[in-house]
Length: 160
Image (cartoon, rainbow, N blue to C red; front, side):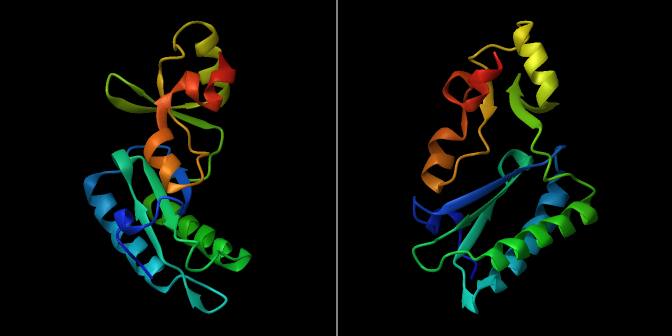
């Protein structure tokens, strides 16, 4: 069952998928419609899942799930991955590149391969005060407070 993102509790589980490119406003509107349709019927063991999404900066898809109501199952997680793979094909975007670092530079969202970010960080192109996105956060609370952060406060710190 789809609910607005702000109605999810702070302890809701989140999955964050970085896009490999900026999505247009038109693409975001279409993706929002598809996400609402998917989340409206998303279930685990025939029980509706209370879920929502956010598309921050037109560069991420965040799916949130209120596990106080029902827990995700292996099959429901598989269904969400299958759905996201369909979005990838339809919108020609990569959502599963875990070797992609997303950061902010001059108020723009940028993407670099992990090895390239690491190389440039060690050459001084980035600092520990570079704004990065920690897509490993697991709750809505952490998403809201620790997802967009300075590299020194994230796992990215190990790249310097």
